[in-house]
Amino acid sequence: MKTTKKLLTVLLLIFLSSALFAQGFGIRAGVNFQNINGKDFNGDQLENTLVTGFHAGVNYEMPVGTDLYFQPGLLFSTKGGKIESVVNVENSNEELLVTKLALSYIELPLNFMFKPLLGSGHMLLGFGPYIAYAMGGKGTERDYVLEFESELTADRKSTDPLYLKAFDAGANFIIGYELASMLSLQLNAQLGLLDIYSTYPNDDKIAWKNTGYGLSLGYRF
Image (cartoon, rainbow, N blue to C red):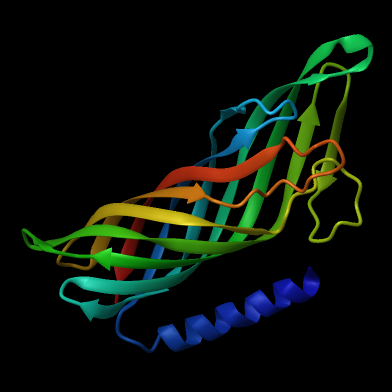
């Protein structure tokens, strides 16, 4: 994982150094409201709660048609969720298990933006895929008798039940407005399409996917 982090850092520096000298370079930052959707140990839909995080990064906008732009970017984004599930324990009893996840990702959005003129500025309508790699995170599980923490890792050497897959991918949906001053406000919705839970024996019913939305401010140079 250390090698991957170094490679991602180098790519980020290359992206920043090249974009800073190019017209169409933009910056963006804002708040995330994230959770984990999917199925629990019993195959039932997860009962979860939103957690608050943030995102910040850069993008570059290239025209590809009338009012249509391709907008790749590079973001640091925090995600996670608070998951409640009922698990079977000894003597056929059931207990409530609460899992809190705080995850950090380097994310590459590849969005297409439709920007029709609206008033003195432009309306923003966007969609596209994203790919992401987990730079780290922490998970805490609590039930009535147990509490423990675990560092997330990028390999499967650990037997910790909080182990997650490092790679994630999904879809972005964007709506917003860009002022004539090039300052913009946008609402971002994100749907994770990959199961980030690394299954262990007898855990094949579990599926965890990142989902959420965010609100951000941006500026284009």
